[in-house]
Amino acid sequence: MTGTLLLALVTFGAWSEAKTTLAPLAAKVTQWCPQVDVSPEAIQQRMNKKAMAFLQDMIQQTLAKLQALDPVCDEGLLPAFTKVYIADSTGFALPEELHTTFPGAGGSAAQAGAKMQAVWDSKSSLFGHCALTPWNVPDQRSVDQVVAWAQKGILFLFD
Image (cartoon, rainbow, N blue to C red; front, side, top):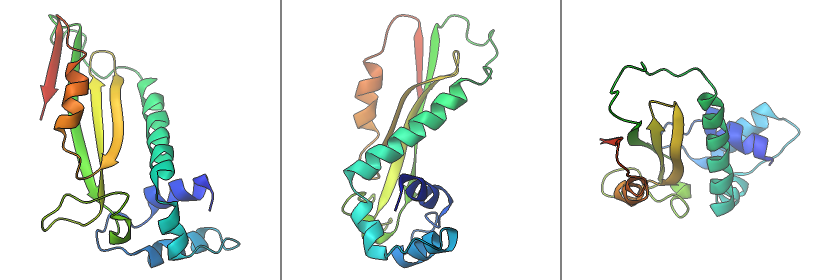
């Protein structure tokens, strides 16, 4: 299974449903690329720290392309600040078989999941931070890293 197939699987696959198992995902790979025979076990074996680093790199490359777009913030908005950082995260469920690499939030939530942490400077339209983490990693772990950027004239907005 290539990186391209893995990326397609996690972006266009059935990951949005927490109860998805790896079998339908393996079938999706075969549907997209009939000459490739991928088993559910093969997908699970590839869901490791190397795959997580690869996916995080792909997200960062995508966000870098977004940064090249024209700014969306009115230059007159919040003129007293040199930077306005907006920090947030979003979590999503993954198939249960991935719980060792991507533990879920716990309790009655999905047993496996991931979270994307992002910090956007609305004045420059640049991302200051982006990370893909297991869902059970609290947002506060990223807050310390972001707050380290604090300087006079910078506004931070957290949810």
